[in-house]
Amino acid sequence: MTNKENRVVQQVIKAHGPILDLEAHPEVLVEIVRKWAFDLVEEVPDAGVSPGGVGPVGPTSLEGGPGIEEVLKAVISLQRQVDKLGRRLGD
Image (cartoon, rainbow, N blue to C red; front, side):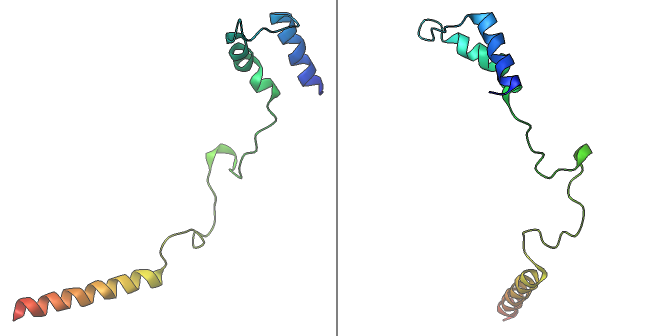
């Protein structure tokens, strides 16, 4: 056990004794988790976020979403549909 873990165990023993009866007092487990869980958690990785809440900086062309080719295809398709409707209404 690490020093940190040993310290937490000693604090729990001091507060609740060396033996826990969770059947009789299940709320003790909840109290222990609430009180000491953050002391036992290792450092959480920052997931690549820059300090200060600044998001990624750089080109966004690699992000997901439709590219210019897909947009142009959709525009041409819509243009053809509008032409067909115009011809039908002109008849």
